[in-house]
Image: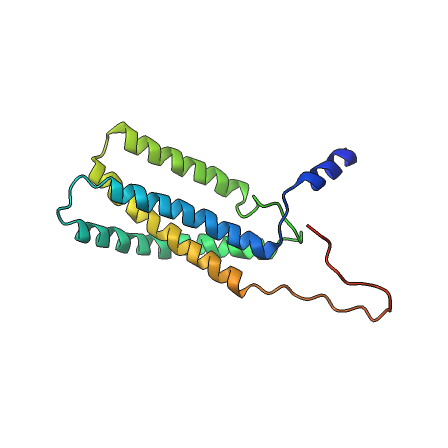
Length: 167
């Protein structure tokens, strides 16, 4: 079993924790950008488009403050507190968040393809969801910019190095 774990450690795509925050920024920004693009593209008409987009963005900001702010803070805190210097590139989410993301993507596709709601309502929903995703990506980016590794205390013994292991 130890041989298998060593092989896994060698092939694991590990990156420094600070850059894991940048990966999270990119993933949340791509998801939010995709929903923004799809939402604007789904508007069937341009009547009151500015008002609808404004209301969707305001709703998204409220949703960000009610839910996504806590979620993004929790993810940043979890990433910063990881014991591993170079965690796997996919560890910017925990398993529960990956399952939630899959359910949200599936429900978005189901709602759009089912025809239960008109395209205008789906477009507003996409724009509303794009806003907290994009704001969360900004939050992850700020955490990446502010991240400072705690420098190890240099060893006074000559000849010993306090270098960090490679990823």
